[in-house]
Amino acid sequence: MEQEPTGAEAVEAGRARWQARYDAARPRLREFRTLSGVEVEPVYGPPGEDPRFERIGWPGEFPFTRGLYATGYRGRPWTIRQFAGFGNAGQTNERYKMILGAGGGGLSVAFDMPTLMGRDSDDPRSLGEVGHCGVAIDSALDMDMLFDGIPLGEVTTSMTISGPAVPIFCMYVVAAERQGVPVGRLNGTLQTDIFKEYIAQKEWLFAPEPHLRLIGDLMEFCAAEIPAYKPLSVSGYHIREAGSTAAQELAFTLADGFAYVELGLSRGLDVDVFAPGLSFFFDAHIDFFEEIAKFRAARRIWARWMRDVYGARTEKAQWLRFHTQTAGVSLTAQQPDNNIVRTAVEALAAVLGGTNSLHTNALDEVLALPSEKAAEIAVRTQQVILEETEVAGVVDPLGGSWYVEALTDRLEAEAEAVFTRIREMGSGDMTSGILRGIEDGWFMSEIAEAAFDYQRKLEKGDKRIVGVNCHTATVEQPLEILRVSHEVELEQRRVLAARREARDARAVDAALAGLLSAARSGENMIPPMLEAARAEATLGEMCDVLREEWGTYTEPPSF
Image (spheres, rainbow, N blue to C red):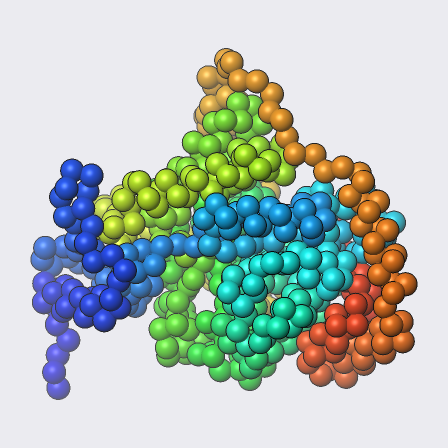
């Protein structure tokens, strides 16, 4: 039996495998030179034996520490995907066209608070919130307007919403149908991740089990009908923004992802079919090297668990593909122009960590929704990194750095310890451990402790933030910020009332009855929910049917 190569032979064998993959991929950029004219190789590795190299590897092969693709950004740059939404669908549509016109490669929808909570704009609980932290979406006609003139068969769209994600998805599908786009051609991402809501963001509709039922239905539907679409984006961003450490963000997020894998397997789905539909969403914070190490560790952990624990055989099922957003919590209201620098540093960390798509925060987001000028600067930040710094010329350029590799190993070890703790809280699987941790308030207390520790360092001056507790003198003037007029809410309510009058009430009632029947029978709920969206049932009406059947959820007190 032929023995596997070891030592320097293994390194050279890996280099040969990488070269074959690289050549077969035919990258768009075959040659890269520094500003001084020095040609650089697409990837670098050790000149001989390196005992760490089995864990580091070559780009495009297991364990994917160095990236999913042999070509890196020479093959395809990351997608510039700016998160945007405010006011009504028409106003947000104009912003989307501006982003695409400025060079954005994909869209990411921010919804207002009523939409995030499954409420209509005329619900009494929506008063004063319509259009303020994102776009108001009440029915499929709003989704038509949101993407008017934007071909959904060509532009990938991410939607950041979890509690009412499934009915919002159905409205998106209906908008595509009305554009004449075959549903099977749609490509994009729906957040859907309900675990992170209980852990950090606190936007849910029901208890965990009904939400998991909807997520399982969506996974089944997309695997069968929309193979390129990613029905679940497992989000660490909100966990980090709530105050977690980098290791907690990494561990809690991947644990959530493993639980969704267990959900798919419990439905009888083939892991090699549904796992490529899982994507991830991470925070890029200000600690430059720690963030790079976090992204590298995430890929390695996910690949190993998918192969060794959950039996994924194909590379695509082992891949951790992720979107990154620069850290909103790192932005300061004091001296807000400094936020441009913070965002650029964080974006560079995401790129050096191998992100697949990226949102860069605007300088004024700590104060309000981004102005048009600030949104353009955010897009240009990514373009300067891509076009001028030449960092896209080499795959994983920090691979092999003693510091970065040590950080990567350390974060991986901390995450593994957390996985063990979570599984011990349950019955040995990740899902039961997460549900128990939510019920007991364990995740919340872990994050709260980390946030308290950070705040204590800030107040003692151990952690310094320019413009906040050091270098506070400034000549900067107050910013002009975007303000959403109250007229937006009044107009949205007026349009919604007229829409209700114009639709076929009998068709709406029949569709909502079909949705209720599916909820009670256990059948897949996506087809009846699509029918409800086609009939112009509102988001609140669909969610209220399910609230009446499943009840609502109140978080247990934890002290």
